[in-house]
Length: 334
Ligand code: NDP
Image (cartoon, rainbow, N blue to C red):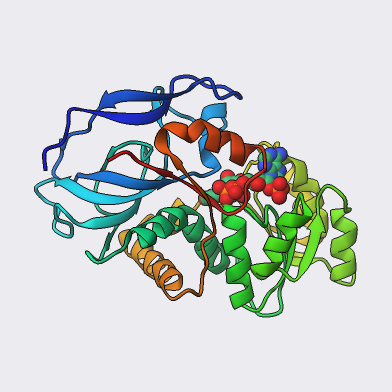
């Protein structure tokens, strides 16, 4: 197919706590330069909390910076040495700059080929499930291998990553203690597998965890809130517990003396998804498992809303104001 020279993208042209730096603009369409590259025409792309970190300067971004980390679409161009993909293939992938009509990826490592028969409904779920699903799936295996009977503290339990975590933890037979800011969110966490519920606006998290675990503390905590919950999470862990700190929704955890971990011999990780799927075989292994869980109905991906690409500012306001549950995706103009 012919690829237009100009395309619509969603980018930031400055750093800000506010939304005024987000622009929907015309931008040069990428072209193949080196032999490994692949260009994908995007259909749906997922919204993740990480976009706010780039905008706020928590993570570095070279400006102007096209947002987006995951999408589904169709391959429209490949470099000479690409063997495992062809023009016309439907794909689901993770890469930068996916809030765009066309995205160039450096190679096929993180591009998963889908059957030609993949339906639009499946495409929406895969766009919604890639980053958040792979995060929860790799973390319950590799950040901490969750075992039957483990007590697990899970924050943002009704968010995109959170709802998937709840379901995977239930499959493993863990006792999930879900933390969320409203009772509606907690009901949703329960439907998805949480056993115990803590309302972060009304309850004392540490007291509740001590009651639930009979004073022992939890085996593992998955904490994506960051700064505001670090101390509480440390207190909630049992001796030899594992602290998986994996997000900054309230801001990054400030530096602290390592000796804080000693009284209970706490194991602390600060993982990122990419570190578990960096190699092609790792990416393929987990993506196959994720897609099979979605297709078989064992894993439910809850779509909160589908926004148009140009309407990302509204999506950003919604997710950052804590008013969403499950996943937000953007439909890309064709
Ligand atoms: P969510 O849908 O979970 O939205 C974020 C949620 O964080 C909110 O709904 C809110 O839930 C909670 N939250 C707690 N404190 C705050 C705060 N001060 N401001 C705003 N929200 C707050 O987003 P995602 O599913 O996209 O991501 C969840 C987390 O996982 C993020 O922190 C993200 O950065 C992290 N993540 C990390 C990855 C990694 O590789 N390390 C990969 C993917 C995601 P509530 O109101 O119930 O508290």
